[in-house]
Length: 396
Ligand SMILES: [Zn+2]
Image (cartoon, rainbow, N blue to C red; front, side, top):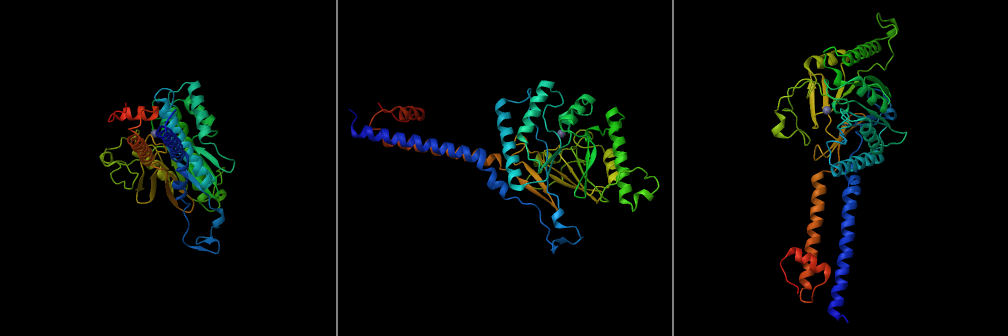
């Protein structure tokens, strides 16, 4: 029959096992689910400071403000380049980040600035369908929220890789053309297929440029008083008379990220690397064309995976939206836009790793303490195996 000490050690080991299991489950639940709530809860829609009786200074009703969320470079891993665990983990993190943000912040419209997929540029029809299915699951949303997706080089390939079939399958999935103006609550959002702005007369480039010229005319006619009376504006689409917010994947031309600051700017060792035109950023020529044609009040772009704010020609502000994927950075974020803009950070991956590591260290200490307490009694399986692992004490 077991003596009292053996019964005591068995009870103690049982309790240790139960408490450890509960602790591990709690830590897992916190790191994989709960942590998104307190972190995103710190974010809020930007508010106007000067509100008078429900109206802002320029007369726009505060009730008509659009709540827009902007993120970029989700890079869902494909069938070729990604390890299954990497894929599972990154997609779970993005799904929880996005779903928690939707639940807490209730945006009316969400823009994703391209590079939705990592391997859209070469994926087979079967793999493409699988990527699209996972995207729709991760970024599911209610009918109260509109999801608008722009095209990036990883979705259809760099300029030399893209073709009509890749562009059309992208546009079909997201039910829209890649270059257009979307008007919401009096705001003109200009969506640009920036992959097709090489200016070399390629068929897709020609088509996109032609559309941009038309949209530029529509906008400039709308900005003039009485567009129907203005010469050359016959048949132009009537739009709200405001400069657009331009959204695209590639940033406008800039030399480098040297002047970028902030906690999600490119790392110091990368900031001074010179950007290549038509690869890292648009060409100077295409950038100037876009600025002259549209005179945007704001440009939002992705592609660099890091945050940055630039002022072009002392007039046109551009914000580089960092990647939403932990695979690309430790502190992904998204932009909240209403009266003005604010940035909302997701939990940092290093925090999650620190919590897991601390929990593991605590568990190890508890087991060691338990083994040391009962080492004179005799071998019991859990104690024996773990202590043998530690390798410091003999229990036989
Ligand atoms: Zn890109």
